[in-house]
Length: 409
Image (cartoon, rainbow, N blue to C red; front, side):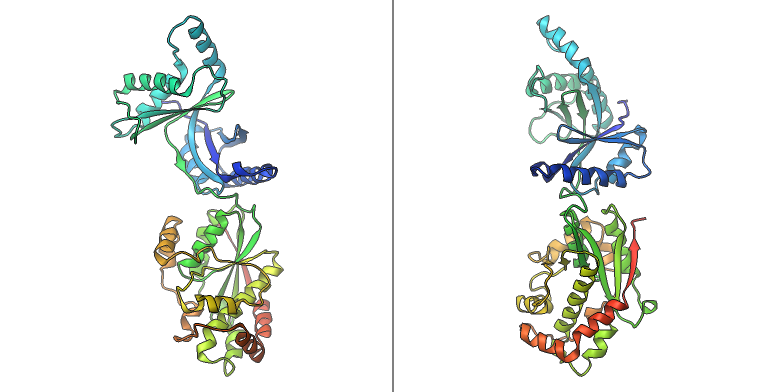
């Protein structure tokens, strides 16, 4: 059996493209890794030659730690590795080269063959991929791959295949160590959670808005959530599904997530007799956006996030999107704007939110007028706002808002 490994090598994504502020993103990423691995036998997270090495005191937890690291935004892939000290390799290699004989790479070949025997599964062929971060290593990458590949073939009988192999042995030559591993667990990439400021997400009970929130989290945004419920007080609200959706998203967060629960009775009371049926939907959306903006300002959020997809429903025509938020000063981010429903649903399934999103739930928007206006004008909505005292409805709603902190546990 291959020796258990207490090290997990992690490659970060576009952080590598950052300039002078790269260290800021790396500090945030390392901090998020440390939080994600709370309770695990973590010894240290070290930055080694454009990689992060997660050192554990208990090798038996490597696979579970790898699973947790997948949800840390900013990482591209990770893998449990076996680290072979360079001094063991360099001394033997120098001796072989000076004696003009075939290099042995004994320790590397030993680890590679053990890992192959343990992890090959049902693979019918293999390939060795070698990368040299340290170009001063005396053998070139193809030569290392040939030598290690020969040892694996001799030990396992697997034939080599250079194109589309079923099993890959990776060898990474660093300055102080050589890492050998046989699998890469992909992560989500993106930027470290919390590195791009805070945002306020308008969260419904459907498929779209949780995906929008997740995509912004992957870009480093730390979200607060606002949900609007029917009823005059929180005791009448049926928001367990909403809390469950935030709990799912909290798996990808390094801090508890805030959920603001807002009653809509202040809008409904003022809309009666002041808003025509055809304008009720867009005016209600305007009420939600204005209230979310007020809460965002109070909680130091720099923008709003919605699950709008252009043309998907009546409130999401270009005319209506522009009219609803014509006087909102905060930027409104719409990461789903160019996606269709199938694409959004696919993302929902990937992040684990779909099963909860499709549970029965009657949100506030579903009870609005069935025939809303499609080409609303900003000046008309401003007039309706004055007529019904929309600002008063927003103030009252904000005053009645209840905040809940939610974690993934």
